[in-house]
Image (cartoon, rainbow, N blue to C red; front, top):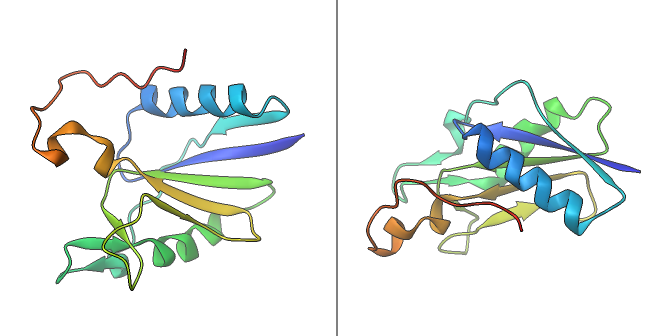
Length: 125
């Protein structure tokens, strides 16, 4: 059985993490998903002032210190991510590897100029 540890990177609502776990378990039935008790701080060196974004590769490198004895770690953040050569990324993963990161930043309606929604619904049917 594969085990995925969800690692909050920066402040992420607990309900959001629970819904992501629920979705992973539904999509991958032979997977155990747990939420880390600790939150990883966003590495200051990942920030690019000119872009006002965070380098996802730099964050993944910092995540390597958290691997311990977990099969896979999925970092969840709400900051805007990029990799050199692209305007932005929704996420990045090692391939092959055990680490990945996703950002919720561009999933919120207000990013696209729509009104802010007070209660986001991330629920998995």
